[in-house]
Image 1: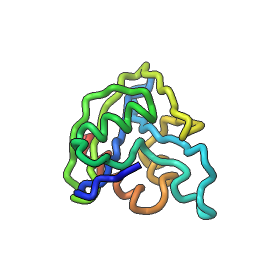
Image 2 (image 1 turned 60 degrees about the horizontal axis):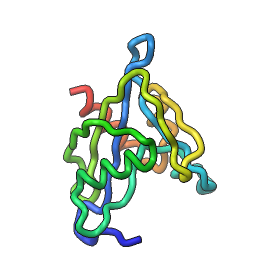
Image 3 (image 1 turned 180 degrees about the horizontal axis):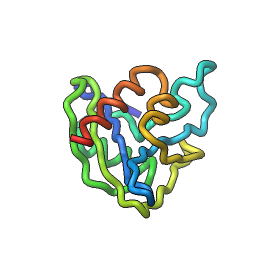
Length: 135
């Protein structure tokens, strides 16, 4: 697979919903492949690389759809010119359809999502996008 040589090279989408109690919870995905020894890249939000000639928003939509089966309205947040960042709100009763790259999905409070997403750059991006989605 080819990756766009022009930045942004990929996109991350932070997805949240309100649970039955009205609390905001965030979607994290567990990678089916074995994680690094320190657990890095084991859990994370939908994300992936941008193909040559693909628009940034098309990349974000494709990755979200491929990894979760979700079709949601995306909102871009300028965080890093090298990697695009988006957030999306899902309905409370949404069903996630995992791709074979992932073997588990959880909806968790922000603090849990940030604590479980590694390396630190992913956790920082998650936290920044969560703050932007609340604005």
